[in-house]
Length: 273
Image (cartoon, rainbow, N blue to C red):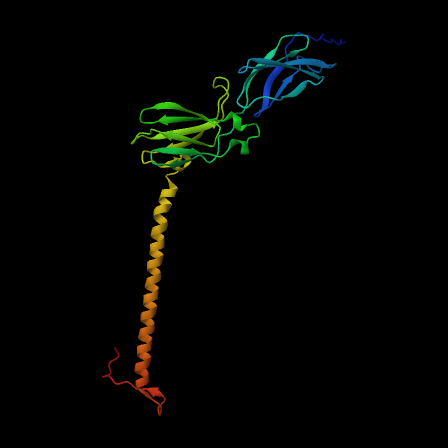
């Protein structure tokens, strides 16, 4: 004997296993499971997105009968911080999580040009690779003095260059350039970093880590070139000497040639040079 018991669904339970599947610069894919297995009707969920930086809220409605629900939250900002709450439309118990979107990339090709009493930082426009970046937002520049162990904010600009003055001799500096931070410095782009030594030569941090291959090449290439030139001159001199000896021997042989015998005759007393 047996009986079939069907439990009454409890719509006050929260969604289960809420988590982020993928996070981009302007979107986030989230997934959760229904409060109970195999729903027999459409379930209406409320997805609340709280912007922790701007202090604003948005609510989206999602209807699904599936046990597992996937939803994409759009129109987010790069480098933003969000609090996501999912619950049934009847305001049952909730599940929540925090999401940080991917920040804007670092500017490319950061370089230094040294002038008489200052330096100029140059970089490529971030708008070339970031469709979400507007040049009017601008960039901000920071400087770290390793000798003094001090980080200073130098300012911001909407251009692709920045002038830095009053650098001290004997100090090593690190410069960073990034998309300007918004809302109290909470939404920033990734920084591009460049090292500047006391000799006044800017160098990429990756070049520093790899043992300055450019400097090594600057020494090795001229040395190899001089060796090749020296070898070339040596071969030319040997060839000219060989031709001169060959001509002298030919003239000497012709002076001893006998047309009757058809050969050249030498005596032991002849000077062969």
